[in-house]
Image (cartoon, rainbow, N blue to C red; front, side):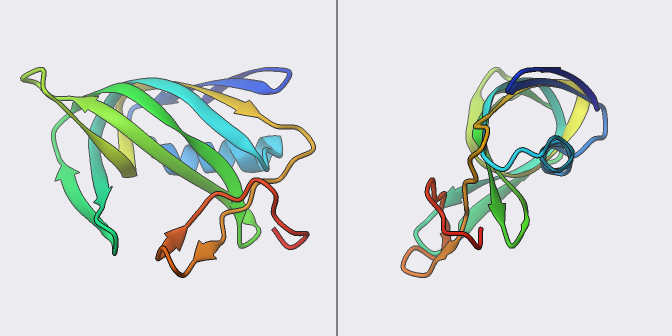
Length: 145
């Protein structure tokens, strides 16, 4: 991972084989980002799993072949005292079709370029919301976030 930092922004370049969630979580941990947004991302994913929330769980689709990372967005919060990275992606197929959804996991193929911005002095939480069955972003968490 290569990082350039300017105020509350981090431009990140990930190399082939690196895991998006792991590396962005490591960036959040190292840089002290407790509230952030993944503003954009482009590049290539060598493999990935995307999901669609069907109201009970993520119906996932494994992508074992390389796909262009057309767009990446998400949020960085704190859950159980650790960085929690939530990502969505649009991916281009070799036939120029587009697939996308919740990025369950993604491994970089060739490279990925990602812009992260932080909200200094803030902490976003990601508590489990039982009525939804998933963790939701909380912009005003209590002191235990």
